[in-house]
Image 1 (cartoon, rainbow, N blue to C red):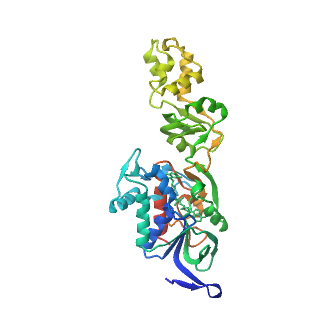
Image 2: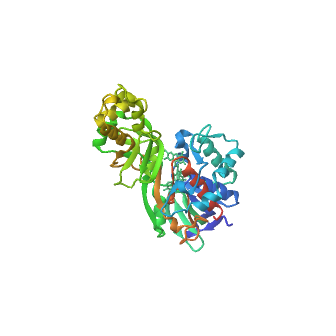
Length: 402
Ligand SMILES: Cc1cc2nc3c(=O)[nH]c(=O)nc-3n(C[C@H](O)[C@H](O)[C@H](O)COP(=O)(O)OP(=O)(O)OC[C@H]3O[C@@H](n4cnc5c(N)ncnc54)[C@H](O)[C@@H]3O)c2cc1C
């Protein structure tokens, strides 16, 4: 392990076993594990603050994993690429780490684990581990050029030139450019002729046409349990009506599968059959709107009646009208005009093509020593802690080989 090199005209160039670009979830984890294996590591990030996404995640409590982690909760052009990394570093491994450092956590719902206290607990832990193992961390540093040499990589940055045997790209995806997301990782891939699956916003609110919005936007802020579906894929969670369209966990989940063009079907009452409910109630003099407000908020019940243009006593409903109510409530058709884009997306789907990487090492098949980890890779988790688990698992794997 050599520490100093002489570059051009007597310039002293620090040399590392690995340079990791991006001090987010994946970069910090990889640096901590790599350094614990006695690797000399330089971790650089263009932002002044590290791990901003951990900080803002999970409403400030970081939904750091999901106990139901399984490859079927991930989207990728390369089916099952994530299986090997996820099996080598599991949610249990991460919770063992939290237990070791007495960081409290709890399951909120659907296997989602959150910090009891704050996301800062995870950031502090990762910072502590990188400090403990003497990772050289440089924040506010931009990379100008990367060059592959016979023995590794030359990385030129705004604070000087560095050399390393391995180069790890952990710069994440394009979601939330406001806090430093860039397409840097994709550009590095392209520099080395590594294919990138077109990055698109995922886990993102959907925009609706003015036509649909005229009925829905007055309901902005209303949330209801729903089943959102595109063909056979469906999610049963809450849908939230917003002034621009739809959001909430059920919509964010299905948005990752929405590629434009197709309709999304929303079942607004997934656990009941409204036809049976009406028939069980008959004969009744109750107005439909009042009847529906047992199942929905009053505002939503009123809008449903307006949209289907039926509001009469339950006893007076014809079978055709009951069918219309049933169709509307259980098969509400949404035709999104688009997503709200990377500014509002939680993650990026697409990214560095997994066919270009080894799932055993996360190293490029073409370029010896070049690794991609975390969200920059074409592996996208469902909502619920899966994306951080991918960051931990892919980092762990890469850290064994840098
Ligand atoms: C609002 C929000 C909430 C979320 N909540 C959750 C959650 O609760 N659970 C979950 O599993 N997932 C959640 N996610 C997704 C999760 O944050 C990401 O999947 C995860 O952070 C990806 O880790 P990463 O290290 O690959 O990328 P990032 O965490 O994005 O880190 C990338 C790092 O690279 C740096 N960087 C970027 N470009 C450059 C460049 N050109 N030069 C140098 N450095 C650069 C960035 O500054 C950043 O520090 C959330 C995302 C958002 C936006």
